Length: 210
Image (tube, rainbow, N blue to C red; front, top):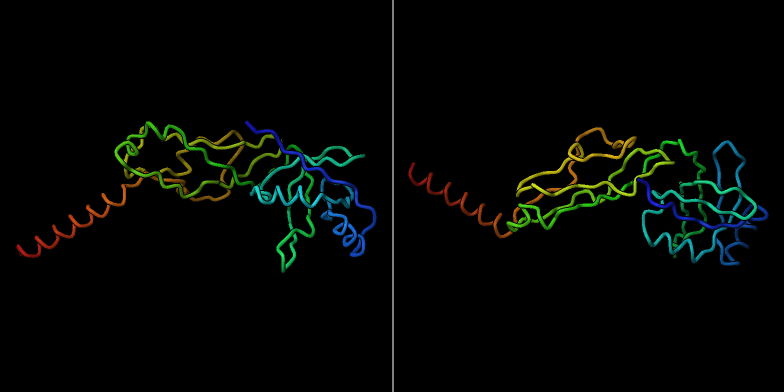
């Protein structure tokens, strides 16, 4: 089931154009615009420190937010663009897209691995190699899964986990058609090197016998 949708607090921005945007930045705000949803675009501004914190948390462009603006109805939005200062790499403008609960969107969903402590391959010394810690899925805005779960129970060294091996939340599907790899249980590096040496020695012996 979907986790709680985080709030993004903003204010209505009075005035438009470069002059108003510069004033917003001087006031410690980041100007932005909310568009889509069959409504007129709304000029907003977001507190700089609050936005920077969310950007540092990661996945900002793939997170659904509940936008709260005083005097406006709450609306679900996703960020479509963050413009940054070319020198300081700090946010200078954001574009937010309004979404309906039934809107289909592509989001990166976190992959959670369970039963690592009981995985036969790992208990033998194998290593879990995660290829995709997040998987891009097409989901419904009103029912975004918090994560997808991969059960490692029963997996041995050499086993590979594909997206087809994972039970996805209802209504969600991968954005990539091919059956891509999420993770695998690989042999420890020492064992893998030993196997390679043994194969090489066997090859040399076979050549000598010939």
